[in-house]
Amino acid sequence: MATTLRNHGFLAEHGSWRLSPAFDVNPNPDPSRPRATSIMGADALTDEAEALLPLAEECGMGAQQTLERVSYILATMAGWRDAAPSRSIREQEIGMMAESIDARLAAVTAVVS
Image 1: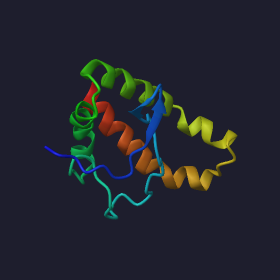
Image 2: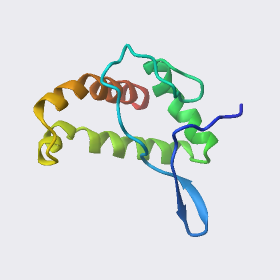
Image 3: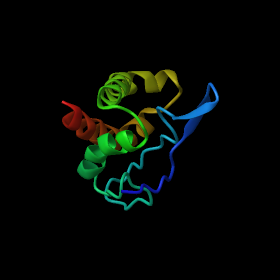
């Protein structure tokens, strides 16, 4: 299956390219609004979360490395609400983004658990 990469970032490292662990992270606070990007053709939240593992494999990451990377990102994101105010993000914005961020964290957690 060929993948059309949109909105992915790569890092140059030791003369080669590797997939960036995060890129263009800007969740849409309106989960009912359709989005222009998808992961491996998926456009529903649950399907996107499940598509992360095949996408990582297609990008050359092994299953164990993928699970370690996703677990690290999930652990980092678990404290996003506590970190946001220290980055001058207002409570109103935190509340607005919470539904989108928390739903995606839950979907990805369900896939890797």
